[in-house]
Amino acid sequence: MRVIRVRARNPFGRTKISGIDFVVNQYIGCIHGCKYCYAKFMCRWYGEWGKWVIVRENLPELIRDRFVSGSVLMSSISDPYQPIEGKLELTRKVLKAMNQKIRLKILTKSDLILRDVDLLEEFRRLEVGLTVNSFDEELRKIIEPKAPSMERRFKALERLHDHGIKTYSFIAPVIPKITDLNYVIERTKDHVEYYIVELLNLKTSGNFRSWLKKNYPSSYYGLKMDVGGYAKKIQKILAEHSVLGRVIVHPQ
Ligand code: SF4
Image (cartoon, rainbow, N blue to C red; front, side, top):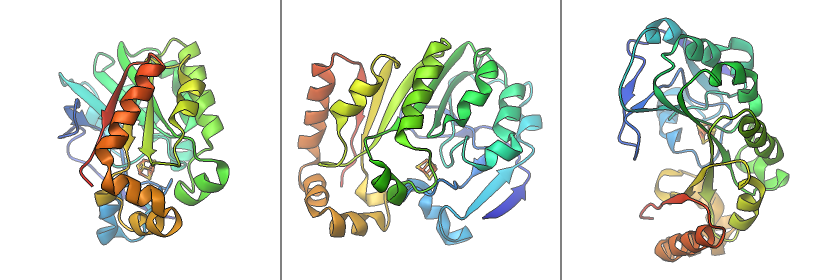
């Protein structure tokens, strides 16, 4: 793994992500190495996705005493709790320094977030999301090679909820005939306030698109030909479970 240490100039970046005003990325790049990750476009500068990470080591000092009104997402082009965080504790330092009145959303695939429950409990307007789907371990090791198992993510949601932290499930990527939405909702609905459900974006998934086409042709063509139909099915499933949710659909 290549670790590139840099000094950042601004802790908050403006974003066009729907419902979010700012992003905080103390890391850029992600060792979880998900095959479908939309941030893979950065490979053109730094090499194979999942093999490098940029550490913005001065983020804690930069963010201290800074306040932004509007919602802040941690993170958008990395996972704040990817494996290197266990050693560096950079996310923990950022949280320690951050203004606790900020409207913060944390999104991760890792139960390492449980280490920081003591800090999370201090934030007044915090929501924590775990990305979950229904990949079995065999598939997860191919598609999300260095991310924790689904079981660990489900348990993390449960533990966060038990601590009184507002949680949501980010069900992504939804891939027709692979992602079992009913299963994920059943596993999480007692521990989350709401769902964000995102269909796989073929356009930004790079060579994952050809992998899917080769290995799961009906999923690939199903998504390509009828993305609107799948979005309606998802809405119906959310309604059948009586849970709150928002569906993100991309033109394919
Ligand atoms: S965890 Fe998120 S940021 Fe990291 S590789 Fe996977 S999709 Fe990309």
